[in-house]
Length: 436
Ligand code: XUL
Ligand code: CO
Image (tube, rainbow, N blue to C red; front, side, top):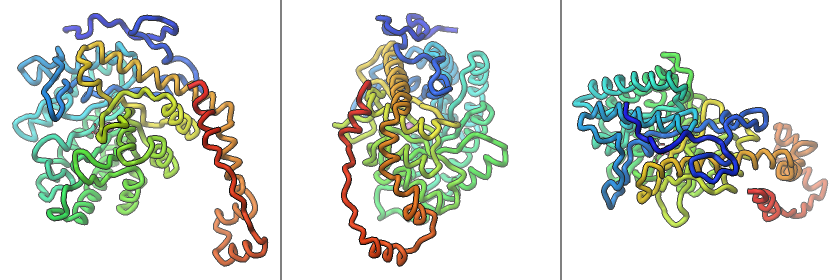
């Protein structure tokens, strides 16, 4: 078996070292609040950006030549890619990977050949998992790339496309199940539309509701215990995407009675494209009890599209981990690096620099978030700010023991004249920033 990264050593924790291929902060065994860093962060490497993409963008061709993508036999190429993937992940020393069907197996002549190709590559993946102990965070089906999906998959005007998508999703879920995948993800990049002149929005919504209901039924039928996750994104590639953000997806799920079946896979850059902070999306998902997993990346303030950059903003990451620690962190999910190197970072070693930097950013943020929790200034401030709701009149309102008339009477009787109180944002921001 060829070695694809012969010049890169195994990346380990070496604080203070000057060499680039080591972690300065990520110590997988270090305990933080009773769990190791590895258990908290549950880091996954994605196949699509890291082992498939070679630098093309809408204006230019590939800039990178990956040595595992050279064999002219598509199945042999697929096997090489699995070798490269597992070598890379082992060298980084992280526990998980994630894939789309099309990232690992070539398109066949027909649906059956597509499925067979995926099953054959999955056998090799299973062997690699067995040998290395690396686990599958999640599998997913690409329902955006092939022209058959140009008008959507589940939301396509043509039921035959719906059926094709259903068959592909069923098969990828079967494979994910066989590989012991912790989650199955759905991201609907073409589940949306360009113009209402050619679109029956209500019908498409009902179609998607049926699709997701049938998938949940099937999951139970086969005894798959992983979580089904939906990944929101407001636009790109579609102009309007139905899964705009966490709250839109939650409303959709409730409408179709599916809010107990699906959780969210939240991506940093998707949150900002929807006009939210990353932390907002995550906090809202926890609040509604639909938090699942995270695609970790960052956007670019200057650009209005999904740039999928590796995370380097420690203050934002600290805030994110601070919220996650307060809510119990991950259960089935993890931090999947849905991030890609820049198009000019063409060397194999750039893949390592990018991931090491991102992982260290998260490790630093985790430690800082633990400190923030222990010092409790932020938590105490918020608790005090809402303390009126924990007792007396406020508590009665929340417990449903009051009504509008009663409240109005109370306000008059007590001659209420509440005085504004400072939100202290700058003081709190300084606490977050200290030590970041
Ligand atoms: C697209 C995106 C996808 C999903 C999986 O923006 O994030 O890679 O994570 O289909
Ligand atoms: Co993603």
